[in-house]
Length: 349
Ligand SMILES: Cc1ncc(C[n+]2csc(CCOP(=O)(O)OP(=O)(O)O)c2C)c(N)n1
Image (tube, rainbow, N blue to C red):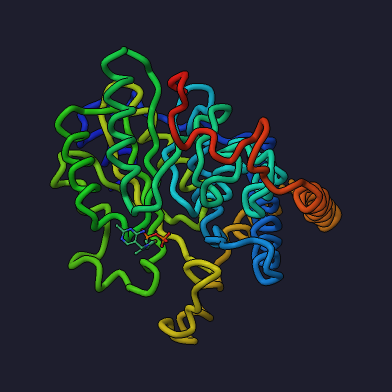
Protein backbone atom coordinates (compact mmCIF):
# COMPACT_ATOMS: atom_id res chain seq x y z
CA UNK A 1 0.00 0.00 0.00
CA UNK A 2 1.30 3.49 -0.81
CA UNK A 3 2.13 5.96 1.93
CA UNK A 4 -0.76 8.12 0.75
CA UNK A 5 -3.18 5.21 1.04
CA UNK A 6 -1.84 4.18 4.44
CA UNK A 7 -2.35 7.64 5.92
CA UNK A 8 -5.72 8.36 4.37
CA UNK A 9 -7.13 4.87 4.98
CA UNK A 10 -6.05 4.73 8.61
CA UNK A 11 -7.35 8.20 9.49
CA UNK A 12 -10.33 8.23 7.15
CA UNK A 13 -9.26 11.67 5.96
CA UNK A 14 -9.99 10.85 2.32
CA UNK A 15 -7.26 10.23 -0.22
CA UNK A 16 -8.22 13.19 -2.36
CA UNK A 17 -7.57 15.61 0.48
CA UNK A 18 -3.94 14.55 0.56
CA UNK A 19 -1.71 15.45 -2.34
CA UNK A 20 1.91 16.47 -2.33
CA UNK A 21 2.98 19.64 -4.14
CA UNK A 22 5.92 18.80 -6.42
CA UNK A 23 9.23 20.32 -5.45
CA UNK A 24 10.38 23.11 -7.74
CA UNK A 25 13.87 23.34 -9.24
CA UNK A 26 14.70 26.04 -6.68
CA UNK A 27 13.46 23.79 -3.85
CA UNK A 28 15.67 20.91 -4.98
CA UNK A 29 18.74 23.11 -5.34
CA UNK A 30 18.13 24.72 -1.96
CA UNK A 31 17.84 21.29 -0.34
CA UNK A 32 21.09 20.21 -1.96
CA UNK A 33 22.90 23.39 -0.83
CA UNK A 34 21.66 22.84 2.72
CA UNK A 35 22.89 19.25 2.77
CA UNK A 36 26.30 20.27 1.41
CA UNK A 37 26.58 23.04 4.01
CA UNK A 38 25.60 20.65 6.80
CA UNK A 39 28.09 17.99 5.66
CA UNK A 40 30.89 20.58 5.40
CA UNK A 41 30.13 21.99 8.84
CA UNK A 42 29.77 18.51 10.35
CA UNK A 43 33.17 17.52 9.02
CA UNK A 44 34.68 20.75 10.38
CA UNK A 45 33.27 20.24 13.86
CA UNK A 46 34.67 16.72 13.87
CA UNK A 47 38.13 18.16 13.07
CA UNK A 48 37.74 20.82 15.77
CA UNK A 49 36.93 18.04 18.20
CA UNK A 50 40.08 16.18 17.23
CA UNK A 51 42.02 19.41 17.79
CA UNK A 52 40.63 19.54 21.33
CA UNK A 53 38.51 22.64 20.61
CA UNK A 54 34.97 21.21 20.32
CA UNK A 55 34.05 19.11 23.33
CA UNK A 56 31.71 16.64 21.63
CA UNK A 57 29.85 16.12 18.36
CA UNK A 58 27.07 13.76 17.34
CA UNK A 59 27.42 13.70 13.58
CA UNK A 60 24.40 14.00 11.27
CA UNK A 61 26.30 12.53 8.31
CA UNK A 62 24.03 10.01 6.60
CA UNK A 63 20.90 11.65 8.11
CA UNK A 64 20.96 14.80 5.96
CA UNK A 65 18.46 13.62 3.34
CA UNK A 66 15.88 12.72 5.97
CA UNK A 67 16.38 15.96 7.86
CA UNK A 68 16.24 18.29 4.87
CA UNK A 69 13.20 16.46 3.46
CA UNK A 70 11.30 16.69 6.75
CA UNK A 71 11.87 20.44 7.14
CA UNK A 72 10.90 21.05 3.51
CA UNK A 73 7.57 19.35 4.18
CA UNK A 74 6.82 21.56 7.18
CA UNK A 75 5.94 25.22 7.56
CA UNK A 76 8.64 26.94 9.65
CA UNK A 77 6.41 29.98 10.12
CA UNK A 78 4.01 28.03 12.35
CA UNK A 79 5.27 24.49 13.09
CA UNK A 80 7.30 23.36 16.12
CA UNK A 81 10.50 21.30 16.02
CA UNK A 82 11.20 19.07 19.01
CA UNK A 83 14.58 17.91 17.87
CA UNK A 84 17.23 15.67 19.39
CA UNK A 85 21.02 15.94 19.36
CA UNK A 86 21.65 14.57 15.82
CA UNK A 87 19.88 17.37 13.96
CA UNK A 88 22.60 19.55 12.47
CA UNK A 89 21.04 19.50 9.00
CA UNK A 90 17.60 20.23 10.46
CA UNK A 91 19.10 23.31 12.09
CA UNK A 92 20.71 24.38 8.81
CA UNK A 93 17.43 23.85 6.95
CA UNK A 94 15.62 26.01 9.51
CA UNK A 95 18.10 28.84 9.00
CA UNK A 96 20.44 28.53 11.96
CA UNK A 97 23.81 29.80 10.74
CA UNK A 98 27.12 27.91 10.84
CA UNK A 99 28.55 30.69 13.05
CA UNK A 100 25.72 30.22 15.55
CA UNK A 101 26.33 26.48 15.57
CA UNK A 102 30.09 26.81 15.95
CA UNK A 103 29.73 29.27 18.84
CA UNK A 104 27.86 26.40 20.52
CA UNK A 105 30.37 23.69 19.68
CA UNK A 106 33.23 25.87 20.93
CA UNK A 107 31.15 27.11 23.91
CA UNK A 108 31.79 30.77 23.15
CA UNK A 109 30.07 33.98 24.21
CA UNK A 110 27.14 34.95 21.99
CA UNK A 111 25.97 31.40 21.40
CA UNK A 112 22.26 32.01 20.76
CA UNK A 113 20.62 28.82 22.06
CA UNK A 114 21.79 28.84 25.67
CA UNK A 115 24.68 31.31 25.80
CA UNK A 116 26.95 28.25 25.77
CA UNK A 117 25.45 26.80 28.97
CA UNK A 118 24.06 23.71 27.23
CA UNK A 119 25.49 20.82 25.24
CA UNK A 120 25.84 21.84 21.56
CA UNK A 121 22.45 21.67 19.78
CA UNK A 122 20.50 21.34 23.03
CA UNK A 123 19.26 24.86 23.64
CA UNK A 124 16.13 26.58 22.45
CA UNK A 125 15.88 29.08 19.65
CA UNK A 126 12.74 31.15 19.40
CA UNK A 127 13.59 32.47 15.95
CA UNK A 128 13.25 29.00 14.39
CA UNK A 129 10.85 27.43 16.95
CA UNK A 130 13.38 24.93 18.24
CA UNK A 131 12.66 23.90 21.82
CA UNK A 132 15.26 23.11 24.46
CA UNK A 133 15.46 19.42 25.27
CA UNK A 134 17.11 17.15 27.75
CA UNK A 135 19.84 14.71 26.77
CA UNK A 136 17.80 12.00 28.47
CA UNK A 137 16.67 9.99 25.46
CA UNK A 138 13.01 10.41 24.37
CA UNK A 139 12.05 13.09 26.89
CA UNK A 140 11.33 15.46 24.00
CA UNK A 141 8.39 13.30 22.92
CA UNK A 142 6.04 14.05 25.86
CA UNK A 143 6.98 17.71 25.37
CA UNK A 144 6.05 17.46 21.69
CA UNK A 145 2.70 15.97 22.58
CA UNK A 146 2.15 18.79 25.06
CA UNK A 147 2.82 21.34 22.33
CA UNK A 148 0.36 19.57 20.03
CA UNK A 149 -2.29 19.42 22.76
CA UNK A 150 -1.88 23.15 23.45
CA UNK A 151 -2.25 23.97 19.76
CA UNK A 152 -5.32 21.74 19.47
CA UNK A 153 -6.96 23.35 22.52
CA UNK A 154 -6.23 26.85 21.20
CA UNK A 155 -7.40 26.01 17.69
CA UNK A 156 -4.00 26.83 16.16
CA UNK A 157 -3.23 24.93 12.95
CA UNK A 158 0.45 24.33 13.77
CA UNK A 159 1.96 20.85 13.61
CA UNK A 160 4.64 19.60 15.97
CA UNK A 161 7.39 17.36 14.65
CA UNK A 162 8.90 15.05 17.25
CA UNK A 163 12.35 13.84 16.20
CA UNK A 164 13.91 10.73 17.72
CA UNK A 165 16.11 7.73 16.98
CA UNK A 166 15.37 4.01 16.90
CA UNK A 167 16.83 3.60 20.38
CA UNK A 168 14.48 6.26 21.73
CA UNK A 169 11.60 4.33 20.14
CA UNK A 170 11.93 1.71 22.89
CA UNK A 171 11.59 4.16 25.77
CA UNK A 172 8.54 4.42 28.02
CA UNK A 173 8.21 8.12 27.20
CA UNK A 174 7.71 7.19 23.55
CA UNK A 175 4.92 4.75 24.36
CA UNK A 176 3.12 7.25 26.59
CA UNK A 177 3.47 10.02 23.99
CA UNK A 178 2.18 7.99 21.07
CA UNK A 179 -0.63 6.51 23.12
CA UNK A 180 -1.82 9.94 24.29
CA UNK A 181 -1.43 11.49 20.83
CA UNK A 182 -3.39 8.63 19.25
CA UNK A 183 -6.25 8.89 21.76
CA UNK A 184 -6.62 12.66 21.34
CA UNK A 185 -5.80 12.79 17.61
CA UNK A 186 -3.15 15.41 18.26
CA UNK A 187 -1.42 17.34 15.44
CA UNK A 188 1.97 15.75 15.88
CA UNK A 189 4.21 13.76 13.53
CA UNK A 190 6.58 11.29 15.17
CA UNK A 191 9.67 11.31 12.97
CA UNK A 192 12.01 8.41 13.72
CA UNK A 193 15.47 8.51 12.15
CA UNK A 194 16.24 4.81 12.27
CA UNK A 195 19.99 4.37 11.81
CA UNK A 196 19.92 0.80 13.19
CA UNK A 197 22.03 1.57 16.26
CA UNK A 198 21.50 3.03 19.71
CA UNK A 199 25.16 3.76 20.37
CA UNK A 200 26.46 0.15 20.12
CA UNK A 201 23.14 -1.69 20.44
CA UNK A 202 21.84 -2.96 17.08
CA UNK A 203 18.15 -2.85 16.16
CA UNK A 204 17.72 -6.60 16.66
CA UNK A 205 18.57 -6.11 20.36
CA UNK A 206 16.23 -3.14 20.73
CA UNK A 207 12.99 -4.55 19.36
CA UNK A 208 11.48 -7.90 18.43
CA UNK A 209 9.94 -6.57 15.22
CA UNK A 210 11.61 -5.31 12.05
CA UNK A 211 10.12 -1.87 11.80
CA UNK A 212 9.48 1.01 14.20
CA UNK A 213 6.55 2.03 11.99
CA UNK A 214 4.74 -1.26 12.77
CA UNK A 215 4.19 0.00 16.30
CA UNK A 216 1.85 2.73 15.07
CA UNK A 217 -1.00 0.26 14.71
CA UNK A 218 -1.05 -0.21 18.47
CA UNK A 219 -1.56 3.53 18.98
CA UNK A 220 -4.33 3.88 16.40
CA UNK A 221 -2.27 5.97 14.00
CA UNK A 222 -0.79 5.34 10.54
CA UNK A 223 2.81 4.17 10.45
CA UNK A 224 4.97 4.41 7.34
CA UNK A 225 8.54 3.47 6.54
CA UNK A 226 10.42 5.54 4.00
CA UNK A 227 13.90 5.47 2.47
CA UNK A 228 15.54 8.13 4.61
CA UNK A 229 18.51 8.37 2.28
CA UNK A 230 16.21 9.83 -0.39
CA UNK A 231 15.36 13.47 0.47
CA UNK A 232 12.42 13.65 -1.92
CA UNK A 233 10.86 10.42 -0.63
CA UNK A 234 11.07 11.80 2.93
CA UNK A 235 9.61 15.11 1.82
CA UNK A 236 6.63 13.32 0.26
CA UNK A 237 5.95 11.08 3.27
CA UNK A 238 6.34 13.92 5.74
CA UNK A 239 4.21 16.26 3.65
CA UNK A 240 1.33 13.78 3.74
CA UNK A 241 1.72 13.19 7.47
CA UNK A 242 1.92 16.93 8.26
CA UNK A 243 -1.00 17.83 5.98
CA UNK A 244 -3.06 15.10 7.58
CA UNK A 245 -2.25 16.36 11.08
CA UNK A 246 -3.05 19.95 10.06
CA UNK A 247 -6.41 18.81 8.68
CA UNK A 248 -7.39 17.25 12.00
CA UNK A 249 -6.47 13.69 10.98
CA UNK A 250 -4.24 13.19 14.02
CA UNK A 251 -0.71 11.83 14.43
CA UNK A 252 1.42 9.69 12.10
CA UNK A 253 4.59 7.75 12.81
CA UNK A 254 7.10 8.18 9.98
CA UNK A 255 10.16 5.96 10.12
CA UNK A 256 13.02 7.16 7.90
CA UNK A 257 15.65 4.45 7.34
CA UNK A 258 19.02 6.19 7.42
CA UNK A 259 22.64 5.32 8.08
CA UNK A 260 24.89 6.72 10.77
CA UNK A 261 28.14 7.24 8.85
CA UNK A 262 30.19 8.21 11.91
CA UNK A 263 30.37 6.66 15.38
CA UNK A 264 27.61 7.57 17.86
CA UNK A 265 29.58 10.64 18.96
CA UNK A 266 33.17 11.83 18.79
CA UNK A 267 33.72 9.89 22.05
CA UNK A 268 32.79 6.58 20.44
CA UNK A 269 34.64 4.10 18.20
CA UNK A 270 32.18 2.08 16.14
CA UNK A 271 34.82 -0.29 14.79
CA UNK A 272 34.56 -2.01 18.19
CA UNK A 273 30.99 -3.16 17.55
CA UNK A 274 30.28 -2.83 13.80
CA UNK A 275 31.79 -5.25 11.34
CA UNK A 276 34.13 -3.93 8.65
CA UNK A 277 31.59 -5.18 6.12
CA UNK A 278 28.74 -3.24 7.74
CA UNK A 279 30.79 -0.04 7.81
CA UNK A 280 31.82 -0.50 4.18
CA UNK A 281 28.30 -1.21 2.86
CA UNK A 282 26.48 1.46 4.84
CA UNK A 283 28.35 4.27 3.08
CA UNK A 284 27.61 2.94 -0.39
CA UNK A 285 24.44 5.02 -0.50
CA UNK A 286 24.89 8.67 0.41
CA UNK A 287 21.91 11.07 0.58
CA UNK A 288 24.00 13.85 -0.97
CA UNK A 289 24.93 11.68 -3.95
CA UNK A 290 21.29 10.60 -4.33
CA UNK A 291 20.31 14.28 -4.51
CA UNK A 292 23.13 14.98 -6.96
CA UNK A 293 21.92 12.19 -9.24
CA UNK A 294 18.41 13.62 -9.20
CA UNK A 295 19.67 17.13 -9.98
CA UNK A 296 21.88 15.84 -12.80
CA UNK A 297 18.99 13.87 -14.27
CA UNK A 298 16.95 17.08 -14.36
CA UNK A 299 19.79 19.11 -15.90
CA UNK A 300 20.07 21.23 -12.78
CA UNK A 301 23.60 20.27 -11.81
CA UNK A 302 26.81 20.10 -13.82
CA UNK A 303 30.41 19.91 -12.64
CA UNK A 304 30.86 23.71 -12.53
CA UNK A 305 27.77 24.36 -10.40
CA UNK A 306 28.60 21.44 -8.12
CA UNK A 307 32.08 22.81 -7.52
CA UNK A 308 30.70 26.28 -6.88
CA UNK A 309 28.20 24.92 -4.28
CA UNK A 310 30.88 22.94 -2.40
CA UNK A 311 33.36 25.85 -2.57
CA UNK A 312 30.76 28.25 -1.27
CA UNK A 313 29.99 25.90 1.67
CA UNK A 314 33.69 25.67 2.50
CA UNK A 315 34.04 29.46 2.42
CA UNK A 316 31.01 29.94 4.69
CA UNK A 317 32.28 27.33 7.15
CA UNK A 318 35.82 28.82 7.09
CA UNK A 319 34.43 32.26 7.95
CA UNK A 320 32.22 30.80 10.67
CA UNK A 321 35.14 28.88 12.16
CA UNK A 322 37.21 32.05 12.29
CA UNK A 323 34.37 34.02 13.90
CA UNK A 324 33.78 31.33 16.53
CA UNK A 325 37.48 30.91 17.28
CA UNK A 326 37.85 34.69 17.65
CA UNK A 327 34.83 35.01 19.96
CA UNK A 328 35.59 35.33 23.70
CA UNK A 329 34.72 32.68 26.24
CA UNK A 330 31.59 33.41 28.32
CA UNK A 331 32.40 35.70 31.22
CA UNK A 332 31.43 34.99 34.81
CA UNK A 333 30.07 38.54 35.23
CA UNK A 334 28.49 41.31 33.16
CA UNK A 335 25.72 41.12 30.57
CA UNK A 336 26.32 37.49 29.79
CA UNK A 337 26.80 36.41 33.38
CA UNK A 338 27.12 32.62 33.20
CA UNK A 339 24.86 32.23 36.23
CA UNK A 340 21.99 34.03 34.48
CA UNK A 341 18.97 31.84 33.62
CA UNK A 342 20.15 29.09 35.97
CA UNK A 343 18.66 30.35 39.23
CA UNK A 344 15.73 32.71 39.89
CA UNK A 345 16.92 36.17 40.90
CA UNK A 346 15.22 38.47 43.39
CA UNK A 347 13.07 39.88 40.53
CA UNK A 348 11.72 36.44 39.76
CA UNK A 349 13.67 36.11 36.45
C1 LIG B 1 17.30 7.49 29.27
C2 LIG B 1 18.67 7.44 28.67
N1 LIG B 1 19.32 6.26 28.58
C3 LIG B 1 20.54 6.20 28.01
C4 LIG B 1 21.15 7.35 27.55
C5 LIG B 1 22.51 7.27 26.88
N2 LIG B 1 22.30 7.44 25.45
C6 LIG B 1 22.53 8.63 24.86
S1 LIG B 1 22.22 8.58 23.23
C7 LIG B 1 21.79 6.95 23.29
C8 LIG B 1 21.41 6.20 22.05
C9 LIG B 1 20.15 6.68 21.42
O1 LIG B 1 20.04 6.06 20.18
P1 LIG B 1 18.95 6.45 19.14
O2 LIG B 1 17.71 6.88 19.83
O3 LIG B 1 18.82 5.33 18.17
O4 LIG B 1 19.53 7.74 18.43
P2 LIG B 1 20.88 7.90 17.57
O5 LIG B 1 21.91 8.38 18.54
O6 LIG B 1 21.22 6.58 16.98
O7 LIG B 1 20.58 8.91 16.54
C10 LIG B 1 21.89 6.47 24.59
C11 LIG B 1 21.60 5.07 24.96
C12 LIG B 1 20.45 8.58 27.68
N3 LIG B 1 20.96 9.73 27.25
N4 LIG B 1 19.21 8.59 28.23
